[in-house]
Length: 139
Image (tube, rainbow, N blue to C red; front, side):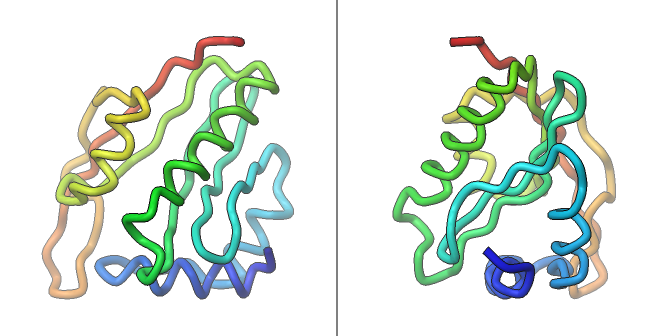
């Protein structure tokens, strides 16, 4: 997927926070340890440093939401991490993002902390981020 395609999906999916630009995606894709799974409908982008991974973003185009695509992408991402001997993965998610929190809970991510006032909303309000972590069991 091109940085432009990633940015387009991200902008469509992230209407409550600033979407990432094609330039930001290009920079990330050029970084060491970056893992991308998915396609132009839905994707997971993360990175692996040493034995710990971070989910940087998951985005699904609105017309493809609630079809299980994010689950498929997340499973492929976790599989890639396990093949690279990662021990854990973490992420941050808006505390009010019920659908995402459900996805992560269904994939054994546990709440390990909160970041108050982390996300800025278009209306000027701020929302906390839940910090989630998953221990990866090696196959």
